[in-house]
Image (cartoon, rainbow, N blue to C red; front, top):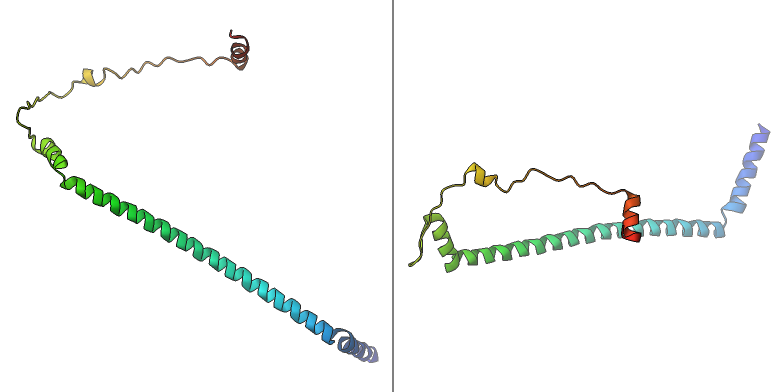
Length: 140
């Protein structure tokens, strides 16, 4: 039992006179404050980064919406124009100008639809790598 008391007294003495001195306390406080400062600085930078990304995204969306609005305004102006009204009347109501003749063509037959569909494809043989090099180097 006395060994335990002696070791406890030694520990308390060492703690009091070697570890809990003013220099060590100031050093510990400085390390703790710098750790806190670093933690809160990193937290603030992270939050600022996220907020900057939100602002950038909002600016992009705002610009996109402005472009869409401008496009719609231009489309509305086009729809109000005489040119569009004339084209729409020609297309939907089969109207024509004076002096024009309307020609109604029959719908295409199956032969006419498939006339230019050549399903026969010529398989090209790719020359070997050696043959390509020979052609490149010697023109063979």
